[in-house]
Image 1 (cartoon, rainbow, N blue to C red):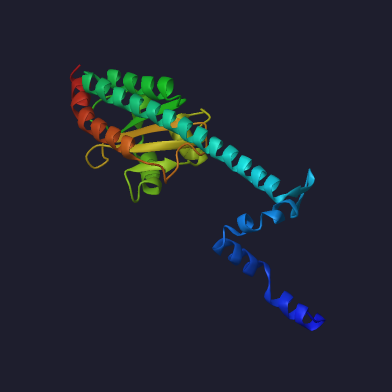
Image 2: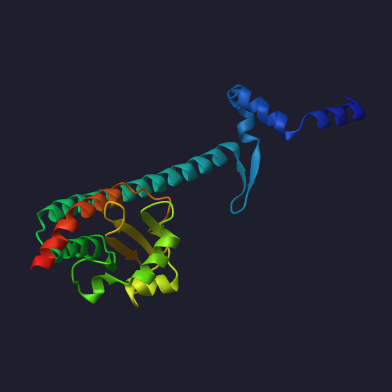
Length: 231
């Protein structure tokens, strides 16, 4: 082959063509197994290695990656099972509650003890019954909070400003929150749950269990508030 012909062949035979040919002919090295021992690849630590050694290295790496992915899936599955079980037990406990105090105790037991959420706050808006200050929400402050966090949904998941943080959690170190409006139209009050992990509560997370808790509390609390007032 002349030098000119070689130049033309080299211009036509680029990496993409070789790659395409090998993909279309996966048995190429089976038909040309003598090349397996001749081809070498540069390895950052081991120097030149054969094609077979390189394939083995990549397979071992892929197996290791798959093992890590499986381990992560199992951890997430166990975590989700724990969360689902805690919420299921909470629903039963709430249905058995006969007072506002018992409701709050059940919520704290689940979130602070079982789910390891370090902070929980329940606030009522303009409650018709007399409540301790820790359960009361000044109308001017809660309206500001509502206007910023509940424009599109009665549930907010994410972070708060410093002012909002102090309004709900005082000086507790909270990085992300779940805020749930309570009542048929969100008029009753708010449940706030805080976590020290900034990425624990995020807008994109699944809201199924939180929605169920919101609906249950909204159904139970009006009657218990009246009983609290009567007592």
